[in-house]
Structures are given as C-alpha cells and as structure tokens.
Amino acid sequence: MGRRLFGISYHENVNNWATKSLIDAMKAMNHDVLPFRLPDVAAEIPHKFTHLEDQVISGMDGMIVRTIGFGTGDQITFRISLLEHFEDAGIYVMNPAYSFRRAKDKYATLTALHKSGIKVPRTYVGENLEAAIHFVEDVGDVVIKPLIGARGMGSIRAEHPELTYRAMKFIHQLGQVLYVQEMIEKPKRDIRAFVIGDELVGAMYRYLPEDHDEEWRTNVHSGGKAEIADLSEDYAECAIKTAEILNLDYTGVDILESSEGPCVIEANASPSWSALSRVTGLNIASMIVNQLVKKATGA
Image 1 (cartoon, one colour):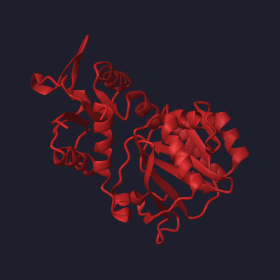
Image 2 (cartoon, rainbow, N blue to C red):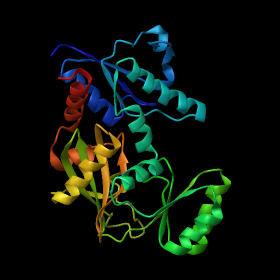
Image 3 (cartoon, helix red, strand yellow):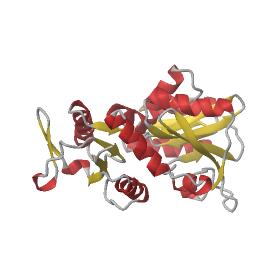
C-alpha cells in the first residue's frame, strides 16, 4: 500500500498521550501525518480546506477526530459541519461526524441504545428542576452528570436529598441541562470494553480505589485499579452491538454488571487506552490506524 496523508485533530496539546501514540503509529506505517486544531481550519464551498498559513489540506485520505475542542454554540456547530464537509469531499472521518457528535452526547447515546434493546440506566434529562426533583424522589440514589463530559469529571453522587436538591438547583441556575441517573447496584468495579471495527480487541475491569472510601468512580484517571477482563459472551456481544448501533469505528464502552446483565452507561468516541494497553500488552494505536487505513482506502 502506498504512502497516504492522514490528519488528526487535537485541542491544545499535540503531545497528548493518545494523540502522539496515533501519530507515531501512522508514521511507523510510513504515512504522512497532518495534526491540526479544527478552529485553525477554514472551508470554501464546494470542497476546499485550508489550514494556518493557507496550507491546503484537501488532499487528506482520512483523519482521526480526537477532539473538536471547546467553544460557543456557533463554533461547535461549525466544527461538526466541517467534519461533515470533509466527508462530503471524500475524506474518511473516524469516528464519523454524526457518530462522534452522538456519542459525545450521553442523552443521544442512551436513547439510541435503548431503542435497539441495549439495557441502560433509568435517566432523567431536562431543564425542569421540579421534574428532576420528582425523579430523584422516585429513584433514590442517583448520579448527577454533565451531559457532555469525560473521565467521570464533573459527576456527583447524591445520596442525601438536601444535597441533591442543592446540586441540581445550582446546575439549573447556571443554565445547564440536568442529567440525573439512577445508581445501579453492582460489584465494586465496572468494565471498559474496547471495540475496533466489529471486534472486541480487549477489556478490563476498573476497580474502586482501595484507599478512597468516599470515591465511587472507577475511572483509572481518578485512582481506580485496572485489571484484564475475559468477558462472557453476553458482555462481549453487548460491547460490539453498542459500537455497531452508534456506528463507531473504535470506542471504549463502559458497562456495569447489573442484576439483569450488562448495562451500558457510555460509549466514548475518543477514548484513551493507556491503562488497557498496560494490562493487555496490546498496541491499540496501531490497531486504530489499521482500521482508519481500511476505511479510508477500502483495503
């Protein structure tokens, strides 16, 4: 296969671990790499894209979206439309623009999965504080999450009614959407399953930190312990089906072991895999780039 040009979007730090791993994997396969920030790209219609200093980037065969960055509603809308414009111009975008947007939105993710028969937690989403309070009164132990977020950051477990009310009222006053989810009874761990294409390439258990009694999140970033997992068929099928429903070329699927079987809480469109690589020994960056080459070239 000949030399190709692939792009990769980043936000502030091109040397971010995951971004650098993908760049190194592309270069190891003898491909040219163009890292760029989406805010630094301009488009002309029909199909011309320029980067800083008028560098034309229309010749990309494909690109990996690691982030669209922060911004106003107009800026985020433009960047999503830019990714769709890339696709219209024949540039393969991974993960695809619509799939990336939907997976970033926990509400859209859960509705799509529920519609297709995947078990998800009972969840309230809305801007009505009173309705959210009634939901909490009905459900009890809940987690208040940002609608768009990563690594469990910004999530609040609210077991006390008064504190729950105060947290939701504060979020409401900030003009943010209330996203409130039931706590699922489970072992002191959850599952991160990593899917590339239509294959489960690896999985790990993430255990609660042993020395943090008040910590309820298992994210390795928050101190959780990672251990390789050999998933049963129903959990493996759940992860693969989740990626298929959301049309994600690669994803980290977060699954809880509920009393009713696998329960998906999130599918990450730009997951990290440092802990998974450490416990499995897999070169996941190369696997992702291989998938990009396959989708971009039809090879």
